[in-house]
Image (tube, rainbow, N blue to C red; front, top):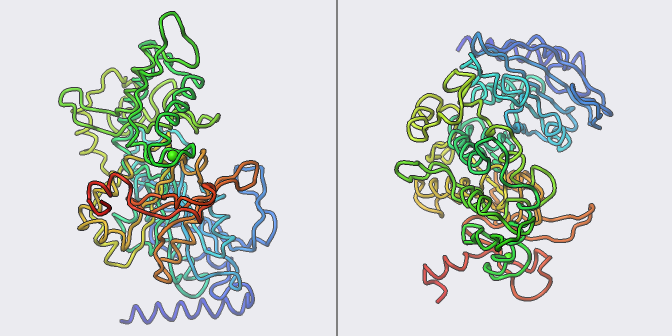
Length: 525
Ligand SMILES: [Ca+2]
């Protein structure tokens, strides 16, 4: 009681000082005085007022144009081996919308996500980001630093959240009305980790293309790399052959969803066989596949399986994801073909076996998967029971792209289905958790399908007004001009053409159960 009273007095004092020193911009403690805040395990390194205008983030040469904000730089050291950089940005009082929106990271990228923070700040939200406790995209940081691996796995995001909430409270005089987490890829993984491990942290969570099944996906990377490289390490496939496969996939499966629009609604229903592209006798070239290439493509579709039992270890990559665009991230090149060794092989070398010379040839899928799931469970977020998050009133939107060549969307869908099963069915799940999978969308954005949509506003509407998103309206642009729009529907629904009007206009589509589901349930016949 006395302690609470003292705390209240301290806050009142800080508020009074802040109002005297800076009556206009901030309601709570003046920005500079936030530097003296004491939070356990956290050091505030600097608290600086940044005037409206150009702000060039550290490590960047491109200035961002931002409204005025208070920039707080902190370091959290929950263990003696930890060094977690955190930034918290607070808008000026008259610009603050009362919300806190934290942002996630991409890859193993150990850096503050300044661009995403800028987006949140421009919305009027206070925001925070962390470097997750290391620098750079390589996983070598984990060598001899098991605590840093835990920091990356979940701890940095949670500590960032706790820290940012206190900083925002002291800067503004009150806690934020609502807290949100927004991330894609590794940020989607972080989003799912928060929903599972710290359900009280956020009111609303947006998880894009979540790489939350990270341990098994790492095995999947090894599988797909091994399938697409010869014993001497040279790649079996190239951009031209991959593009030929994607074209053939679309030609074979486009119409199967009931609408010939250049998009395959759900690649799981597409059974395209790469052998149909096999070169005839004496012919070879970009438009046909050698026997070696046919087998490689098929193995990537099949996904990692136990060599002894045939049990699936990780889903394959979807048909249509081979090369739908020219850039490496719009094809299998970036994470499967181009690397000299399997992507994230360092997880085995530095996180698991502590052997920098570990070789793929020594991998035992059964034994080593069991070992990994026992030793580094903090590197994944795969709990299907989201009861605590649902009970606290949390809302969760997950999205994915059906041709994502980085995080296979089948894994996100499988997770959603497993949660629905655990939570008592789709109806009891859609109350608080909805998944939107975009046909023809790649990793987090891009692709031939409509892939731009405002899920953050949809999430805010759901949390603040109780209006659940029955569809997300997505658009596709060419040269900055919108040339197609389409509703993204909450899984398992799909967008169905009403039969009249342009197939490039969202208004001519409705969300409905997929054709096969209608047949099997008998509700439509
Ligand atoms: Ca189609």
